Image (cartoon, rainbow, N blue to C red; front, top):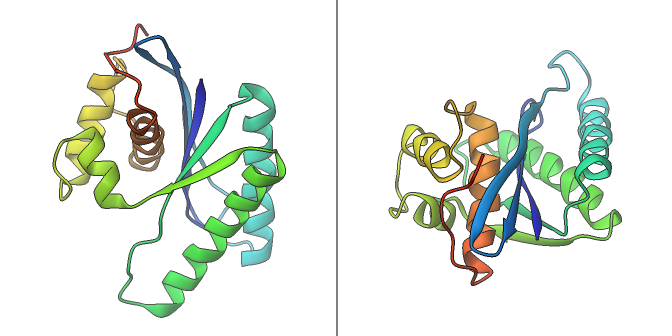
Amino acid sequence: MKIIGIDPGSRFCGYGVVEIEGSTLTHLDNGVIVPGAKRELAQRLVYIAEALEERLHEFRPDVAAVEETFVHKYAKSALVLGQARGAAIVTLARAGLEVNEYSPTKIKQAVVGYGRAEKEQVQHMVKILLNLPEVPEENAADALAVAICHGHGANVPMKMGSR
């Protein structure tokens, strides 16, 4: 089963693709979609959707997992984040994928074992779980963590990846 995880954002949208085969979790790809801060919001959303479509075409995941919105102090920031999540979710659903959503606390619990873990702890555990040569960039690590969280929820026993 291939899982694409998404850490949505209007300025930085992380993605990560993992595969579960038997009891092995393998890293396939990760990165950050950066639409450019100078673009209007609508154009950033289009850029995110198109870039995400390219990843979907390349990796052909079986299922998608997206981080839920967390509460922001600023209403405008929460609305913009919600729009970026919406663009990602629509893109995933239009591709025919089942879209699963996970709270930041649940993701951290699945990856680190502690729901209030710091970003650096998540990045470090993603590196270890996927046997990566280096710690992934923050948004990409978060997206990989979402994918790992879904994999844990699929009742598949997990062990470190072979790559």
